[in-house]
Length: 139
Length: 95
Image 1: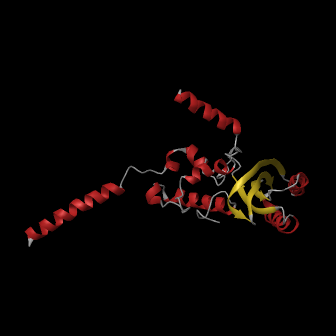
Image 2: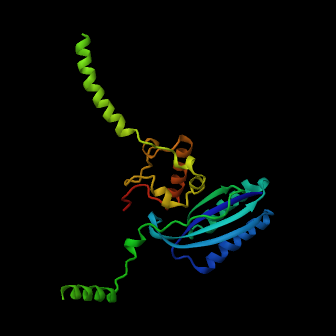
Image 3: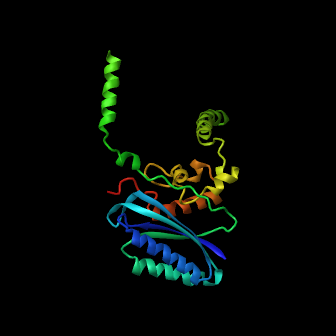
């Protein structure tokens, strides 16, 4: 059995139905290949490092599964066709990578790039607080 | 001849020494040094990878970062994968 992971960059306006379809597809893929479905993680909405398909944001999914070595080529081909033909509009980019079976499944989620500068929300209360503190200092 | 040669060479030597000092520090491959760092070398770990690219998004050479050739190759592979999935930029201004 070989352990694989797929990181998918999906359209920011992906619906919950499409997410379920994705998850079910990967479960089916693993079961059809007589493998094992390990995990399906949704990272959430991220600011992309550069626009992809004219989109500044994207939703990442990390999916892990195990498949026997004899059917690796055919299953990865199926996956490729699925992303390019059926889920063409939803999946913008993807990466398939083989993992070491001995290494633990822990990983570090990346921080969204530029989220601190872009997602600044104007808070009136904070502004008022700042003004008050300035006044107190003057007094 | 010998005196002339001595004069020139002493001046050059001083310059060379200064240059050598500037380039040679105690650089070691941090991935060889610790097992944990080696495990954390992954295309998803952008916090680590960001430390090995310049402001312009270029991959730092091993003579600057101090990585061994094996880990430099691995690192550059991971950075390229992270770029492909839009976790890291190719260049600073994409717009």
